Image (tube, rainbow, N blue to C red):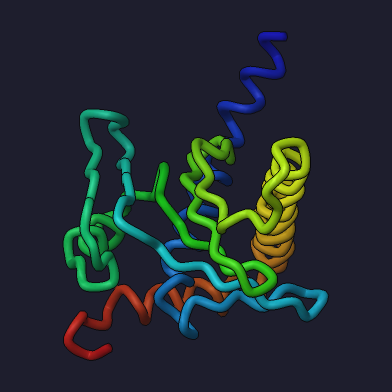
Length: 174
């Protein structure tokens, strides 16, 4: 069991890179991420993002804002090498909005579902679980797409160029 925990700790950086990727992409291309299969999932960073540097919790920043896109604090934290460790994101999936808090372990900390269409309690429960399944599928698809890009040197180089350009741009330019 300790071997598995050790492996998970060593791979934690992938969760941080994934959340950082989602955060930055929420400001690029109007937040739309097109997956390898052609599906497009809109991702928008909302209200809260936590960033952490190499020193751990003593080197952390939490930004809370109604408009994260206008927050220079998060951009500066990214510029100095901090990575996103948790954040609140809005995912537009099949025309409905889902508010999700994700952490670097890819744990879904909370989900705010769109309004349920049914009124009968059992059917509401089934519908809620189906919607949660859509969120899980979207996050898994986004993560797998991220991993494919991350492991392809030319695709990752382009991603890094896009991220660097975004970091260098100022709020006033958008």
